[in-house]
Image (cartoon, rainbow, N blue to C red; front, side, top):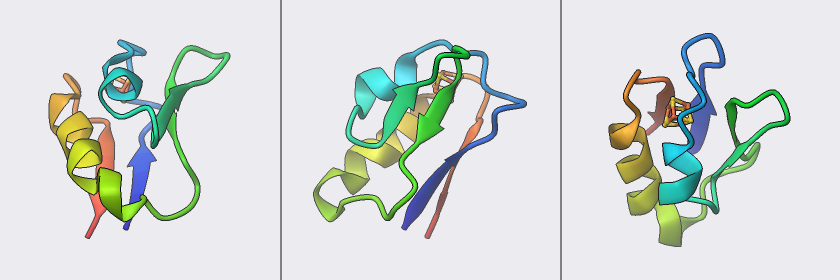
Length: 63
Ligand code: SF4
């Protein structure tokens, strides 16, 4: 499974990297970015938590 951040929607609140730093990080532009590869199995639940915590629903996890 992969995670995607819609950079048109992201408001750079910083929540997702705080909740799940293994999958999300902030870029120099101040928006979140997800790792390119598959989400590691052991952090999948936390990655979904980060998705659900996003105030603007900018995160998509395909499953
Ligand atoms: S939680 Fe949502 S709005 Fe906040 S940084 Fe992550 S993707 Fe952007």
